[in-house]
Amino acid sequence: MTFLSDPSVTNPVLSSLKIKSEDKIIFIRENSLADSNFIITHLFKQLLHQKSRICLLTLHNNFNHYQTIGKILGYDLREAEGKGDLKIIDLMEEMVEYIDREIEDNIHDERSQIIKCVYNTMEKQIEHFISTNNQPVYIVIDDASHFLDLGVELGPIIGFVNRCINLTSKDNVHTVINSHVESKSDLILANSIQYVCDVFICVSALKTGKSTDITGVMTVVREDNEKKYHYRTFDRGVKTFNPCDTIYNLYK
Image (cartoon, rainbow, N blue to C red; front, top):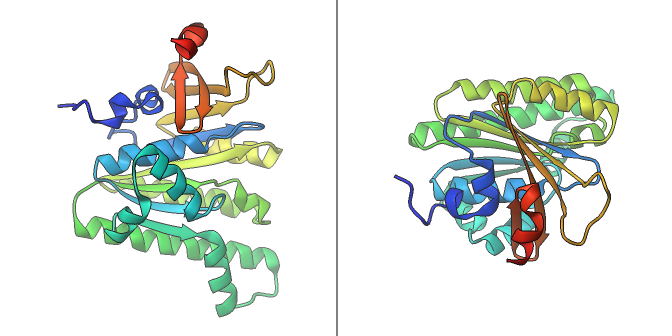
């Protein structure tokens, strides 16, 4: 039974996404000039409401960013962390810890080793979540393209992502991957994830340029079913609507 308090029903973004328990691999592609972070922060609202556990690898924003947005949307990540329902893995902190332990002569090998260490940390956390109860577990990576910005080569990044995706073969384990696309390497990484995902969400800027009424376009694809929405960001949330209903929805 679905209750009226369920954000997947009452929240405009979540009701458009329609994420279900059978959606094991969710990929969010952020095209140039767009910002898809609102997808992640809204998904947290649904996952916490459903009593899921979250392992978040953050490469783009710090914890305070997610906490601030979460409070606006009506949830508290710090509380979830205190209850053991949320594990934050900050890549910068992992890099510092690794460098403190061991310095490699080859910088590319060093960075590849770092993401192996990050994966090992994530895998241990997932195993811990699984061992405690049967509630769903979500691996969230925000965003994978920043490995490239740190100088990690494409091969090890795709290998890392594939290993995270392989964890979804376990019962109740899901993965959500966000990745920005601007360069050729970004596109190769994004295409490799899109090929295997169950739900593909693409966030793009308007082709016609900036608008005071519309922030951008959100496309949601499941198999051969594709739906497009316009969205507009506000100080306290995001509103989605069908393109043909844009003006009506904004001013009703």
